[in-house]
Image 1 (cartoon, one colour):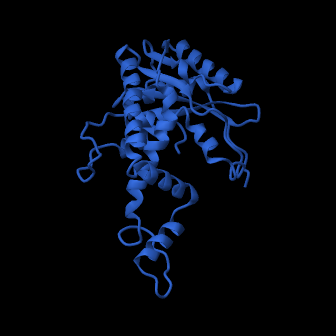
Image 2: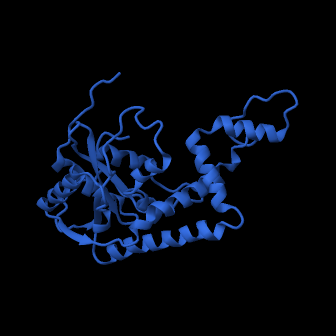
Image 3: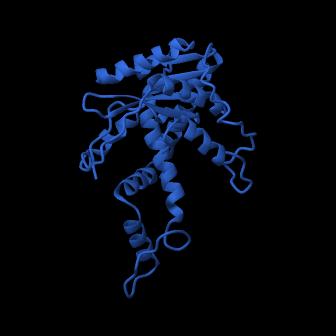
Length: 276
């Protein structure tokens, strides 16, 4: 977690760059992210996607979203209503693809090659070692996602679930590509459909209901786009509410500057009480 956008820029500067030993690492030149923070967003076109106005969204979040758009407009940005028509399919597609990737990638953690190994009893064989290691080493949510992922990747379900979700991902990415091709520079949305939960408050919550809180952020992951959340205000209980900015591929420097302008305009300075 970073303290502000400038901290985020400095951290990203240290993290970014090509790693020849990482096949997922892009060999792109890294801009000076901190130098990009001029706060000048005059002429930038900021899209407001109508599909992000979901049913049951609290009025406080709607209000802060509107206020965020006004803050950017006051600084010279142009606010444009846009459509991302496949947004409604993002959540189910994400919760097919992400667990499938988790199932595949976490298969290596078996007590032999990587990570934790459970303590074995006399007579335990390799099967027992796998079972105990993965049962003890993974938490309930990880186990849940591994099981879902294994299911959607299994014979008979691969095409029905995983391949279909991949096609939906392509359509979601195409929506963003079209918006950017039409001249949109960044997209402003709420970060979450509610404020933060109290400590331990959701420990017994329905996992599916918890997944619904990702409704505004999973599209960024599916489309492979940079995104940043900026604290912008408080709800009636004094809990922070955030706004999300989504940028073009490889334009993190421009996105950080948009976020910097929003952060300065919001003037968010609230700090939590020392609950401990």
